[in-house]
Length: 187
Image 1 (cartoon, helix red, strand yellow):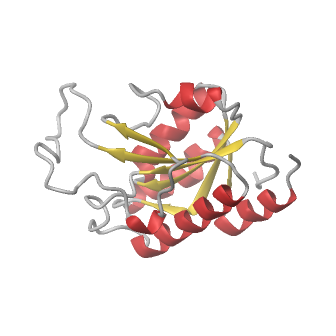
Image 2: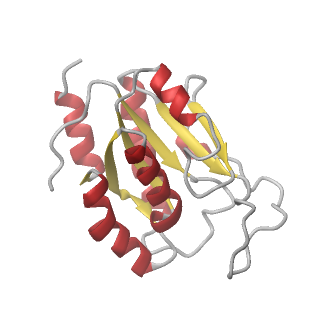
């Protein structure tokens, strides 16, 4: 489905663009992902729309078959990338699960601002981005996914999420298309 509209009160959610994750080998160059996320954040801020910057500082406590990648976080690991140009009005949420809504107050903060739609970007497509998009959808938000502002370390995860999962959760588009809709939306 093509990107059709943005609600008058849409928020941008940028998932896990933080110092500890940007050095990982990704399907798409991380500098391009960060640049698209920055352009989106600037566009949302210019229109006084909410920008949510998410970082991850651990993982859920449940038992898993695969060992956790993170036991002790190195110094600065959770710091948001300076390229995102964090502003005082940005909402910052630290999560310890894949999705940004579980075990955080993100839903409450967005609903207090009367947000009805979210645009999601960041890393990793098949975990943090997809989980956040799923949770937003389940909480009743309209969801848009900025495909050129996300990547994953696993090509098959990125491909599956973008082609099979995301069209069932909302609409997908590029940074340029999203900004084009921001320029034409009604207040």
